Length: 301
Image (cartoon, rainbow, N blue to C red):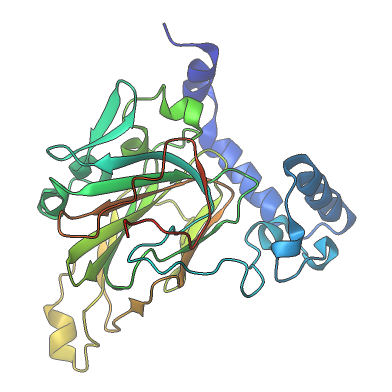
């Protein structure tokens, strides 16, 4: 029988709460905003000495504080093929078994479901690897590249807004393939790889450095943006890219280096990464529940 926590996840008006949290986070409320920020720092023991701007009074909104930049050198990059893209805690990692991704004891989901039904893309990860990292409220909430890559596609997938806490991940079947998410597909020398930003209750929005805020708005249908491997220099090349009512093609190629910022969460959530079989092997040093920091090794030496 579901416990009270699980039942609450189904019954709460999550969309309304998320809109309310978003309005509050964007508010430039002067003394009220400063009180909220300072209470948050105290409650979650946030280390402001790591921030590029350590003075809480410099942030005019909670969003500005929550997505604060770190000071230079706060997260040095390890000499590793793959580096951790975020601060957080390991939810799960390991091999993708015949296209299925382990979520928690008794729960898994398919790569196809995570990727909004794109079975052709999911085929690249049938025998690949995955890593899922949970960002708690106290963590640094900018997301960085685990390796270099050319962006090929971004997909906004509407969905539920369940909490993504460890307790919920252990209770809600297929959680990460059910929640709202932004799927980012990159090319690397060893093939395509994916970084998925998973939304959650009171995660007001998700943004990328090349697009800006992806949500809101929340249109209720899948949206796709395609990006070329090289700049489209003429109209014929741009016209050849796939187009449709909910699909857009851009003419500018986007390359991001290992460790470069690629996005951010407005309030905490989870990232899921998928790598093909030919990618560097994930580290064996990580265990579920372990705290990790952006820039540390994520692949085997």
